[in-house]
Length: 338
Image (cartoon, rainbow, N blue to C red; front, side, top):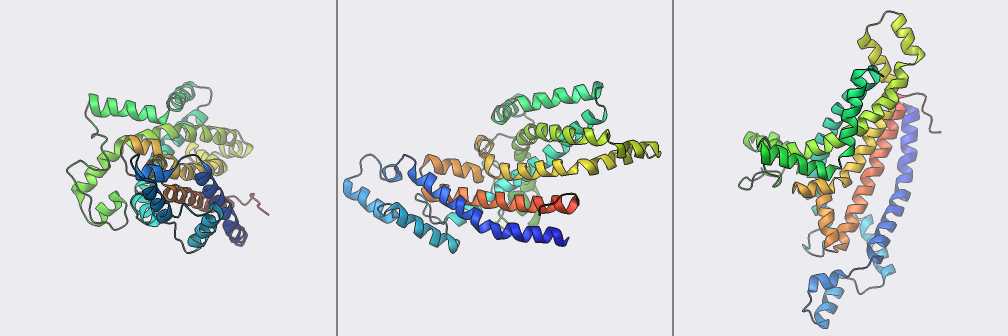
C-alpha cells in the first residue's frame, strides 16, 4: 500500500504541470482559431461603436498575452470566467450540466460492462466453438454501427414503431418538472426527495441514450475481455486448477483475476472518454449534458465556455487516470511504476 500511495503522491505533484499544459493549449486553440464572437453577439446591423463597446466589455480588445496572463490568474482562484452569452459563471454552468452527463456515463458504462464482459466471457470460454462464433458475430454487429446511427435506429424502432420508449425530448416529458436541486443529478435527486413518478419518468427517458452508448461500447469491452481472458484460461495456472479438481466456476474466477487489469484499464479509459465525448448522443436525445453544452458553446464562439469545457474535461481525465493507475497497482503487485 505504501508503494501505491507513494506513486499517487508523485502523480499528484505532476498534476499542476500537466494542467498548465492543458490550459495553455486550450487558450491558444480557442483564441487563434478563425471566428469573431463579437460579430455574432452584435449582429450584422451593429455599428462600429457598438462592436467596440462589446469588445471592450468582453476584454477582447486587449493583447492576447495580457488576456492569457489574466486567465491564468483567474484560474488560480478557480474562476473560469463568464459566458459571453448568458453572463453566467462557467463554474456554475459546469455544475448545471456535468451531473447529467455523469448519470448518463455511469448508467451506460454499467450496461457496457455487463454486456461486454458477458459476451467476451462466452467467446473466450467456448473458444472456437458455436457460442464463440455467435458471440463474435454479435460483437462485430455492435461495433460496426456508429453510435449516432444506432441512436437513430433505436428511436425509430423502440419509440416510433413499437412505442416502448418515450420521445427523445430530454430527461423528462414536456409537461413534467424536475425536483428541487440537491446534487444536480436528476435520478439521484428524485430518489433523495422520494419523487417516484419523476424517477420512473427519468429512468424511462434514459432507456434510449443508455442503450445507445451501452451497446456500442460493450463491443470494445467484449474484445478486451476476450484478449485478456483467453490467454488466462489457457495458462498453466488454470490447467493446474482444473487438474486439482476445482469447479469450472472457481476456475473462471481464477482466470478473471489474471485478466482483470486490462479490463479495469479499459473501463477507466472509457469513463474518461465518455465524460466529454458523449456530445453527439446527448444532442440527439436533448439530454442537457456537458458535451451538448460544449457543442452549443463552440457553435456560438463562446470562448470562456469552450475553454472551461477543455479545462474541466482535461482535469477529470487526469484525475481518473491517476486513480486508475493506483487501483491497478494495488490489485496487481507485479505492476511497478518506479
